[in-house]
Length: 436
Image 1 (cartoon, rainbow, N blue to C red):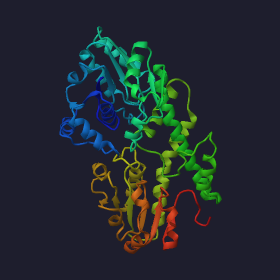
Image 2 (tube, one colour):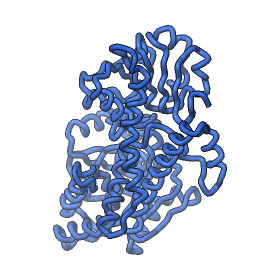
Image 3 (tube, helix red, strand yellow):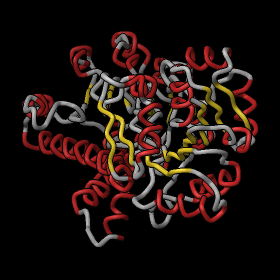
Image 4 (tube, rainbow, N blue to C red):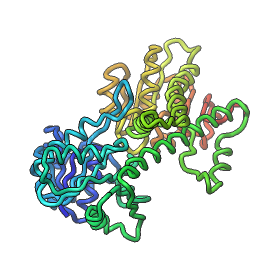
């Protein structure tokens, strides 16, 4: 099939690579000339585990192409996927749909023959109706159907999730569109469930799923706080909870709070939709408030560890919102760093992939290191903020030898199994009292 993808970010690019790998002809369009030039030259513009090899392969065989010209991408397409950003409004926190609507308006004149316009971006309920209205208003003769095709790609696992999805959800209100989408996802038959639902249901499923997972994360973080006060062990508690099949063991890892490009944005948007439709979502609203407050609490926990040390140096391990990506959007690590900077903290930071993006935000407010140990040299405390596997492999004897004061505040519980206390460290993790 011929597929056009509008947007080459963390959703559009892995999706385009994936469909090209399945044998489709894919053209990705983007408005950023520098980005398109890089992609045409075979240079990936994002980091995603496993993406590089497939990207290079499909650029080379010309099944994957890039352009600035919407007409070139859309004119002969069987399916057009909209994968542009829907950032939160800085005031209302609602999803900003200007890029979605601009894409619909621009593509309208170039639709040629029957086309399925599928919204891959995460959008509020009813957006598909508006897309359909915009296209018909601009091109009354267009032969198309607008469908919702919510994405469920986890950053750091996007390639895996594309080829091994838990489910594929298609919100389509016409049999013609369903037939095209069934053909597009034919390689997945027998591997996963292809769910056809109402368009508005598909738009809701994405938000409902992310909001539920965000609440689960916030819940285990609150349980971790309780365990620290009550003398219980959150790791034992989470294991006991997770053994219940009704609950499951995923997303029961305590930490500094949820972040990234999806959970904060989607929970806020879902809460806004609840108010819009007169159906307040109190659990989601409470999770949002608690998660925001948690970043401040975690920053205070790190600063407390060096409160008695004049001009203390803090080594930060991790800036990305999670391992496997260079994305710093709504990163708990970044928010904790920024909170500590308000207290004039002296910080040296290291991240295997996210430093370039972090520098665009933090500039020279912090120092940057080329390795975890370099960041920790002469430090009074190491703060583990992102769960990169290499942090769990650090040699504690070597780490202690280069630090000024052997203290670790491990907000990802990466070093817990290595028992840093036995190596002479003062060690704090999440969800377990020091004397418990």
